Length: 306
Image (cartoon, rainbow, N blue to C red):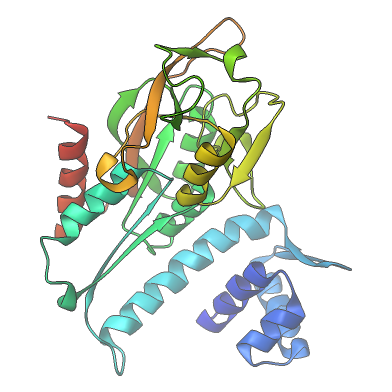
């Protein structure tokens, strides 16, 4: 097994096509196919299924891809620091579900450093990518939540990826709407009241799963639902269509403005509220960098955790 083969695997998985991967990698398709077959033979597994519509990962392939990304990511990190022409800039990255407080804490942390000497990155992204980014060392810290519904599946996934979850705060679900929404003056909002308004949900991509949803009650049948992939679009849909989403109720007005409010969600027999346990994930047995420590401290300060 070589680093080149690992790069091939990662590229093919991203492009879902041997032709496109070969073009991007500047190798012939026969050479690429031969390299993958040699690796599959060495490992004793089938990594890709070939079909008329391209290639897809097998279950063994999906598991191997996590390790491939981790190894190749570490190689790239070493190369960037010590290789010829390396900048030797210290890097720090955070991957997060769509939480404005996570961005606010990032802003507060970055202000403590000379940005000309560091390379910072924050990625608001899909749940699976938060896990993948931390697993492959693309990001040092990931922000996500657990609840009664997703806990067992998420904890199993985190364990298999070599990650651990650190608790930050528990909160009940809120209905997140804009301040002029017809339900804005309610002291609490139940599921029945929301039926005539579109539910807004963050898209989770090809690997979408109920367990990856960023909102509680993800298994419900919503008469109206719109999926978006970024927070700005979500906020626009709240204003334009009186849409709503179910969230933690933690709103950063400094970043989002004062146009949006969070109203307590009132559960019923069929639609039970669920405690959202928000926390951060790191690789197991790792010590946070100084930037990581300050970021966690900024998170706790914002969430008022002692």
